[in-house]
Length: 125
Image 1: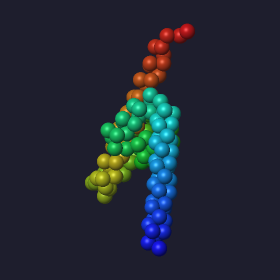
Image 2: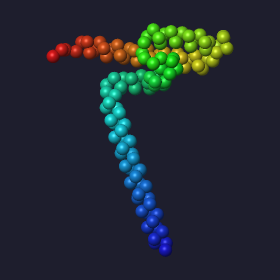
Image 3: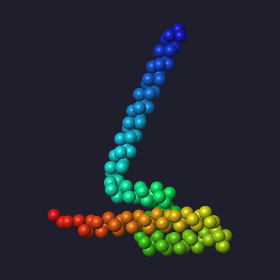
Image 4: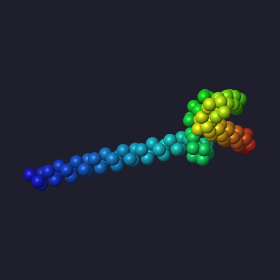
């Protein structure tokens, strides 16, 4: 009886181990595919996200902008910065989040402008 119980436990551990290894391989493959899909621009954007601590999507949500328009970003930034000013009863924490979000979006605009310049300077064949 103990022999069968040990065999059942070993077989169960093997099944769980194989399933875990398969899931891990799939996750690595999906991660690699996502990184390849982002391409070179994604690497710069990811670096900017890690430096600022905010992803591009988070920064857009904080400043309530759907597309990267410098005018819209500046308008929403100024409004949210004033509303969250500590002297008018706002939150310093939220105000700092607004500043970080603007910095992140400004960095993304800079990356896009740099890519546009590089594309414009590329030799035409």
